[in-house]
Amino acid sequence: LKGPSPMPSQRTKYIVGLFLTGGTGIILLAVIWMGTSRYLEEGQFYVTYFNESVQGLDKDPPVKYRGVSIGRVLKITVAPDSKLIKVILKIESGQPLGSNMVAQLKLVGITGSIFVELDQKKEGELDRSPKLTFPSEYPIVASKPSDIGEIIRSVDEILSKLKALDLEGISDRVKSTLDKM
Image (cartoon, rainbow, N blue to C red; front, side, top):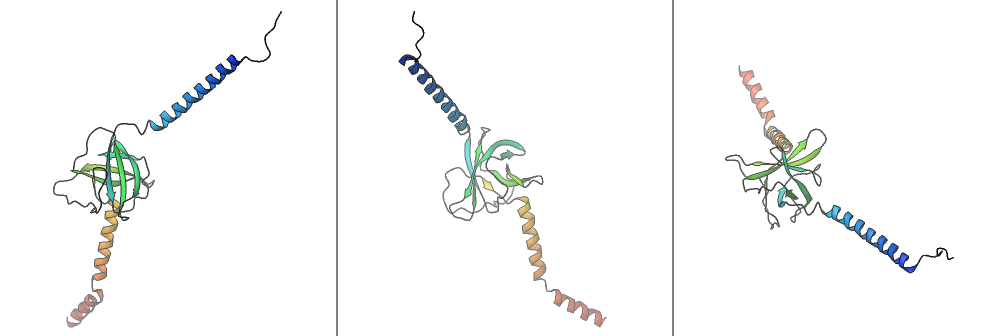
């Protein structure tokens, strides 16, 4: 009587090795596929340039058209002129963005998070996009200053006009007029 051999045969070793190699390969391919599947999604790429701070805008927040999410922010970098901020948008809704679109940074509540809001340019609205001195790799979406940026600019303008007033001269003239009366 001969019992089972205590040492595995070469064939068994080969099958186990093949199984482990195949399983590892399948797991590796699955991880790579899941990681890159997001980048293989359909979508059109656009770029917009902002001439203000984009603090609070991170990679992957939504790009919204009148409140409806149509894509996401793919990348944020400093533009080639080292003055503007370049924001690459991936529009996943399938609808192309026309030349009448304008992008603006919008604040999400009090969290400090920001997203990009797209809307149609209003009739007669001036183009307030920063002027570009370099070529762009993607179609450009015009931009306009954020609401907060506009408020700060308006307050600065009012303060400089107040500083420009000759309050001392006005006060002296009022005093002299009152003295004459």
